[in-house]
Length: 168
Image 1: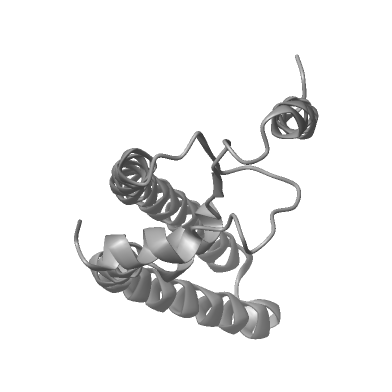
Image 2: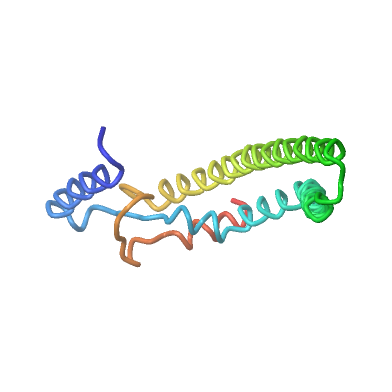
């Protein structure tokens, strides 16, 4: 299985041979996908939506974590003066609370990642449609997204971002 870089190099070499044969006929474009996801209004709106959606759970989890830490510190200070049975009981309770906290934290991260992927897929789909429109309307021969280097002459990222921002 070829690595992504090797595939890119092979594709670039193939394009270079075609460009050499018909330099004036070939129209190439490049889109920086990371920049689109960072700068486009729909991508930023999706990020804000996720932050708002998970803010309450994150705050609650942070509060539980702080309370748990304080309870552990309190037990540590009081441990020498507590009876063995009381110390053991409180340690078990704190261990159970710690497991519950870790489980809730994992669930939050899993839910957040799932929602991020959903929102990212929606933005990526919209960006792909915009790229296809630009490809067809401006008669490009090829538009690349993963390249090692691309000059500003072929970079159409700004055009894609502007089209996404305009809601096309």
